[in-house]
Image (cartoon, rainbow, N blue to C red; front, side, top):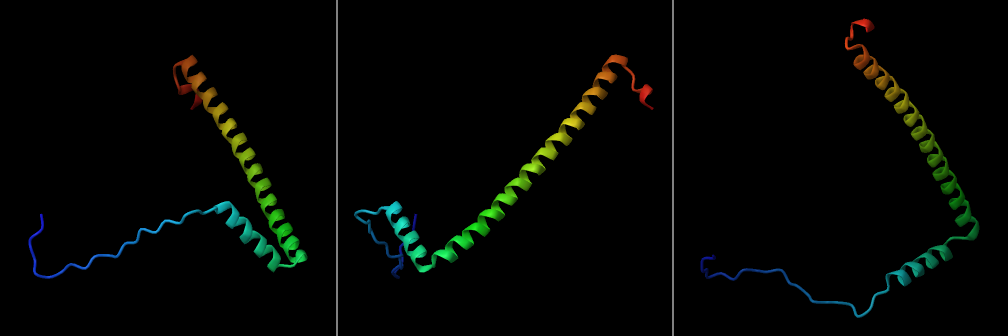
Amino acid sequence: MRLPTLFKQNRNKSYNYSPRYYDERKERIENLRKAKAAKSDSEYFKGYRKKSFREDWKTIKSMDRNKNSRLRFLIILIFLLFFAYAAIKYGKLDFLI
């Protein structure tokens, strides 16, 4: 509960503005058209190709890394399963030392 004061408290002004209609897709398309019109066609395609090539290269590299990591994981898993099988079958771990 507040205590009564003699001074007026300043409050933030608030507005209840709501637009009647807003089409986000239409505005985005218009902005893209304006951006394309600002650039010449050769600049547009030249930049697009470089960017696309770089992104494709990164994608291929990441796929190779994922493949290598999966192979490494499988090798380690097989080794650990073999070790667990030997430990369960023989009951002692002295045969490894």
